[in-house]
Image (cartoon, rainbow, N blue to C red; front, side, top):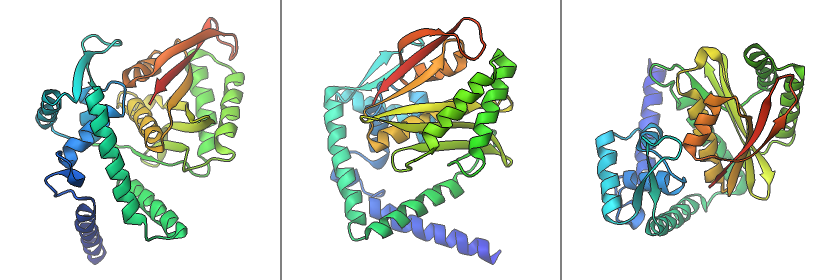
Length: 307
């Protein structure tokens, strides 16, 4: 019990320090006219090519009514406009106006300068230690989502073999693809993980009760382009929104790193994955017949999202 109390005290102490350091309690975040919550919503809208209010709520945890008030303010000030989704005509997308992009650019510049100021006195080794400690804290404190029971973490030893095996078995059971697909997955894993650079590349393993239930990876393809690779959700974990969560994590990381676009390769019959890609802003840019994997009538597709 004493250890738990000490841990709680340490977390509360850090919260008090960090909220002061980043100006959470300031009326205007970083000297601007918007609160931290409003600034976060503007980031979610301006950094994507169309986002639904529901997606912002899922990402930020904001109350729907509070988000609605923020969006209405942005609309009054000419920062945000509503459009209809091309994928689902019933869905509303929020997009930044040119004025909104200008305001966001200023906010982004101030944010980067503020964080750079916080770490300016640290050596390169201390900055690496800080980044590692923050990543570890995020992993440890990432509680399973209510009713869903999973958590996301970076890959570790043994995960690569699991990724290859489960892709091979699941796609064989559901689509009849043979060992050539499993070999392709092994080849992709080699491309991703030999020389894996955690500063530019990302890995997300979904885990529930000590068992892997999903994954996705982001690979640096060069020329400031990233690739989304090997999205998978175990059949037992479908219906939890895990596929969308994994893609959102991947896209968010790519934006934070500063990639100009993300591409991905998929097959036209993978309707659930394609629906996710379209919903988050990917667009189909190319397709061609695929006679690999032992499946009949396959059509490969390339999708792209400009960030």
